Image 1 (cartoon, rainbow over the protein chains, first blue to last red):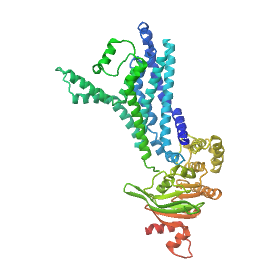
Image 2 (cartoon, rainbow over the protein chains, first blue to last red):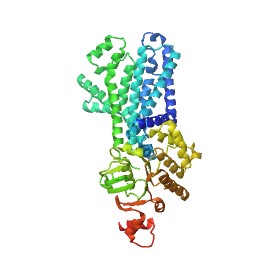
Image 3 (tube, each protein chain N blue to C red):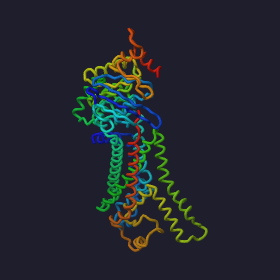
Image 4 (cartoon, chains in turn blue, orange):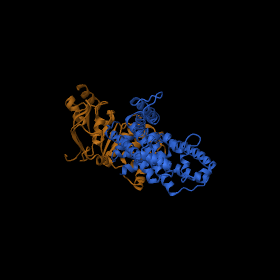
Length: 319
Length: 250
C-alpha cells in the first residue's frame, strides 16, 4: 500500500503541475465556457418556450451553441484528455531509467501501474468536476435558473459516466505506453485508435449493414430489410465508445429523450411512450434506458485497464 | 543457508526464449564482503542481479538473499537490498531532496525520519551544496552519487552496484570507489560490484567471480585465481591479467 500511495501522490503532483494539464484544462474550460455561453444566450432569447421545460438548467449542457453542445464536445474531445495523460506513462519511465529504480524499492510491481492509473483518473475527475461546477455557476448567473435536485443528480451521473469514458482512453493509452518502447509510437497509436473508434466506426457500421443487408434506394426495400439494416448499423456503431457515451449522456442530460434507439428501431412500448406521453422521464427511468450503455462503458474501461495490468506484470524487466 | 553467507545461488538459470542468459549459476557471497562480478557485456551479470532482487523470474535453480527467497519474497528482499542500475534514472524536474523524499516514501519512511536521513546522506555523498538543484542539471558523477544516496535510504544490508563508475572521470571514479569501500567498512554492507574497470575492482574486492556467456567460470580471491591460472610463482598478477587468461581459455 505504501508504494501505491507514494506513486499515486507523485503522479498526481506531476499531472496537476504539468504544462500539458494546464493547456488541456485551459482548452476544455475555454470551449466549455463558449458552448455554455452560447447555450445561455440561446436560452435567454427563447425565454417563453423555456417556461414549458422542467429542466432548463440542463439545457446549458445539452443545447448546441454555434457548433456543438458541451456534451457533444466532451464526447469528441474528452478522449484527448485520457490519451494525453497516459501515452507516455510507462515507456517514459523505462526510457529515463526510473522504472527500474521504483520497482527495485520494497513495493509491489503493480503499485506503479495502479498508482499511475488512479492518479490519471483523479486528475480527470478534478478537471471535470471543476469545469462542471464553474460552468454551473456561470450558467446560474447568466440564465438565473437554480437547478433542482434532479438536475443536480443528473449532472452528477453525467460526471461519473464522463470520468469512466475518459478513463477508458487513459487505460488504452497506458496500454500503448507499455506495448511500445517509443513515446512517439504510443502517442501515434493512441490517436490513430481514437480517430478510428470515434469517427470511422460509424462509417464501418454503414458498410457492414450494407454488406449484410443491401438497401436499394432506387427500388422499394421491404420494411424487414430496412429494420435489419438499421439493427446491424446500430449494433456495429455501439463498438465505438463515443457512441456508447453519447447515447448514455444524451439520455441522462436530456430527460425528454426516452430511448437511445433510432425511430425505426423503437419497440412498441417506446413508440407509445414517445408519442402519447410528452412528460420527461424520471431519473430512475432514464437510468434504466442507459443502463446497458453505462455497464458497457464501465466494462470496457475495466477490461482495458486489466489488459494493461496483465501485460505490465508479465513483461520482463530489463535495464 | 550456509552460516555467514548472505547470498547463495544454486544452479540459477535464466532463459529468454532459446537464448540462455544465465546458466546453472552457483555462487556464495559472505556477509560483509565486496564481491567483484566480472564479465564482458551480455555475460549475464545484470540478469543475475535482477533475479537476486526478484525483479525477474529465474527459469531454473534457486537463490537466497539475506536468507529470503527472491521469487517468493521479492518485497522483503528489496527491503534489504539497495540496487544501483547501470543507467541510473532520475526525474529531471525533481531536485536532489525531492528525489530522495520520493525514494523514502517508496520505502515507507515517514517525512520526519526522511528529512534527517536526507541531510546525512547528501552530506555523505558530497551533494549537500546541490540539494536544491534539479537532477536534470546534474552531471553523470553527481547522478551516480545521488543514486548511491538513494540506495542507502533504506539502510541496506546488501548493495548491488551495476557499473557504478561508468562514465565517470578518473577523479569521480576514485571518489566513488572510495565511497563504496568506506560503506563496506563502516556499515558492514555486503557489496556485489559489477564492473568492467578491473583495476578498481582489484582495489576494493575481497573476492571476484568471472562470468562468461552466462556461466561462472571462476570464483575466488584474485591471488587464488592467479595461482589457479598461472601456477605458483613469485610474480604478482593483476586482475586484468587473470581475467584475460580466463577469457582466452574460454
